[in-house]
Length: 354
Image (cartoon, rainbow, N blue to C red; front, side, top):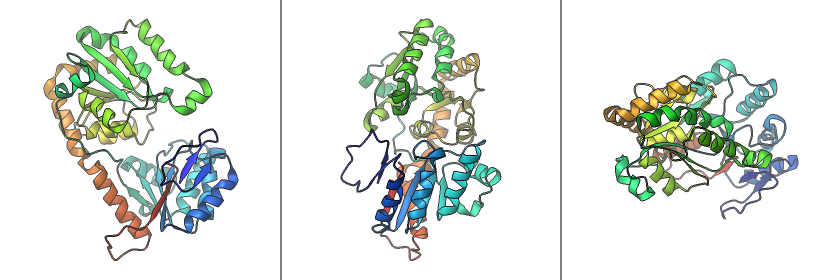
């Protein structure tokens, strides 16, 4: 099942049997009734910006019309929600059989700030591809990066990524390491394109030029597939997530970097603080280009530090590979569906909101 804005209608693969137009309230109950007739469990992916209505409250119309049990996976848990956001999330959690979060900090926040019974929560990590641990120097030639020290960020471009901080930190890093190249992989977020076009990317480009960093920053301005993304990750010496929002409770990009065994430098948002503990990465205070630059310089300078951080991140991420995460979801789905016999056949499931 696909949930999409009215100006995005596909195409979708043959597996998509139902579509919900985000802003059409009647679509939600209709789709819920339809999917209830053909699946054992419904998987709901929740992010406030995905679902229509005020604070995404159309998701409540969907679960209210379901006749099949549902599991909700929460991609955002706000520390200081508006009353409307709090009400929507609380009612969503109350209306499903199980709620999945991807970090222990998110589970703690739901229990303490939202009053959710911890027994109704499941912590299943963000999935990552199962990649070998490789030397970046072996991959760089395939991307034309020979002789460069590569700092990488990837993901949909938008102000929440904090790339301005990384660009402002770069002049000091380049002064110490003239071979440095900061690569930013990803297209601008489609919602941002609709509201303001490429103004954000143009602002980053202007910042690069103002610092005289034209030879040290590269934008890969497109969506890249899994194979190409893997090559960029494996070619990176350092991965950086300079996010300004310290309440962020999950980051797929950080998870992927750990899965590739990269040395990571990050601001201490909630997810990074949890996953990069015990030497699995280096955390720096937000808002300081000088401190971020110093951290990047230290990691680039010390090959032993890069290797040890990357190895610890890689080892920690083994429980996050898709096969392990899939098995966790399989057990949860079987339990929710009432399958206590341990059957090898997974119940039929529909996913919506992804």
